[in-house]
Length: 376
Image (cartoon, rainbow, N blue to C red; front, side, top):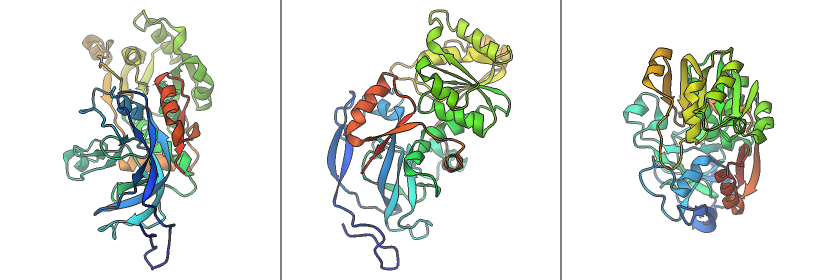
């Protein structure tokens, strides 16, 4: 593959190789990845080729790899390139991108929803994150655990100047997901918001956005080992989930949280963990007119929210809502928060070869914050 040009005949980027390094799910259904060599793809009509430098690692990738998300329609195929938080530079503009406003050398990002149709009802309603015909990065569409990937020119996300690529990567899923969820919570500045899973990849960003970006008062819930991270992220109170019984249907922890939130409970709860127990307890944390926002997708057999009894829902006028991955507009807004220093992912950097070990940490619930892969 020849070098790209800048549109004026001059070489703008190094020569594009024919082959690239990529990390695949070599044994879907298990925690296993493998670094392989793949062909560098050619962009089709409306596409751009991106030389990725960084990719975040998300709990969603774990669910896709292990086939533990019952909401996904089909098992993940062997050889799938995972990942959906990729950042890099455009190195080739495909046919039909002349009026896209993009140019070679632009830094852009690839999200969980890597492409949309633009024609379905959700797209028309400004809910492009749930486009009926969306392409999902890392699940049947090659993802971002590779050095080169394709993206639709009309849906890649611009990365603000001044925001480092490794810092931008987690914002493309974790950041925009919790930002969208906080908006759907209907909470107002000064009100109490509980973040369940507050020390995780989504949760610690939710705490920062809620407390520093949106003016909410935050109570973070997680394992005790994550207390320092949660408080540093801006939580007013931290609740160690391990200090409360699991066989009392959430009564003790609910009473404690209500005592922290004016004796009435929280105005909103975001469940950012994949725990069914967290979902069972969450409605008990709410005050009247409160909103529970479902963010984390539980793995294996789905369970109902066991405490969402109709009588309580009616008498307290509670709302339960789901929140997906946000829109392209919300992704841009989230990146701008990060560029201004309002939110910053707590992460460590690893190479592709370390990915299996990272997933093992995720599966054991030991990972604090995020991991970003250096794809060089």
